[in-house]
Length: 337
Ligand SMILES: Oc1ccccc1CN[C@@H]1C=C[C@@H](O)[C@H](O)[C@H]1O
Image 1: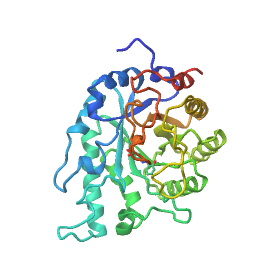
Image 2: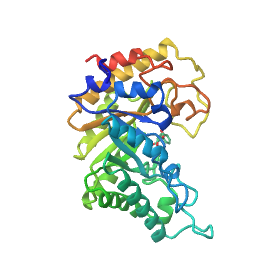
Image 3: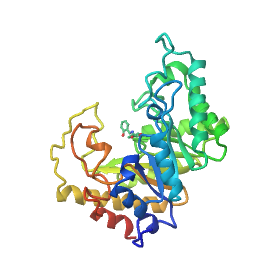
Image 4: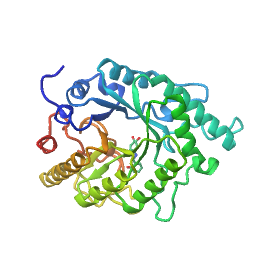
């Protein structure tokens, strides 16, 4: 055990501080950094439907098992991500033996089998699940995302996923997880969804705010309003995928090129990032009674999913540790309070 205080120690009286990991990273020097700084894990990819259930009658457990074993060995909390999502799904999921779209009944049965099998395998170590990820549409006048889940099942799959997860592990905390959660229009739709589930008595315990933010958003008041509104649902909140991109967030069409051509981690970008980290953690502490966990998406600037999204092959520097795993100035802004 490291004698040096880490993020988890600074925030011990507030909430667990987690990180999204791959099984490979845990075997390297990044694994040592994880043990010093964090007390909660999320599998970045290993527990998504495609990676863990590649064929209808075949699961691939090795990578998820490796992360679960690390969590058990080091007594870390473990969040499950994610039981029902429209991305990184396996090829077989939505089609029958003849390659035709499956029926609603068949798809719901496949969802139930998947959730029951995966939740049961890790119920000793996973305390919370992102049961459903990203079903709210980003289109202004559309409520639910027009995914194959919605096309085949209608919106019933959403409550079904929560009920299946609760049947498999009645103790697990069940979250609805989404991004662009600071946008007032999307925020209202997320609240409409969770309140409809609450009204039907569906077992749901929390809202996951992915928190994929940037040097230009959220503003202090935008995040304050967001946390205030989500708190009013009475559900617990978690920050589930925090990173702060050094490139300005673009909200126009699916532009894979960015207007922010400067790909250096300039002093000016770093100053903006520091201010943003300072402000968001001020608000996390303000809402400490509603927030039950903060998880960073990826460990250090050595690798971030943002290095290839929304722009391919554009190095980002969104986290608190640099490519040499050293604490950045933003780290000080987060722990000095
Ligand atoms: O910020 C976004 C914009 C458009 C689509 C998805 C997202 C975020 N989507 C997240 C990001 C990375 C994945 O590893 C996570 O599983 C997913 O929840």
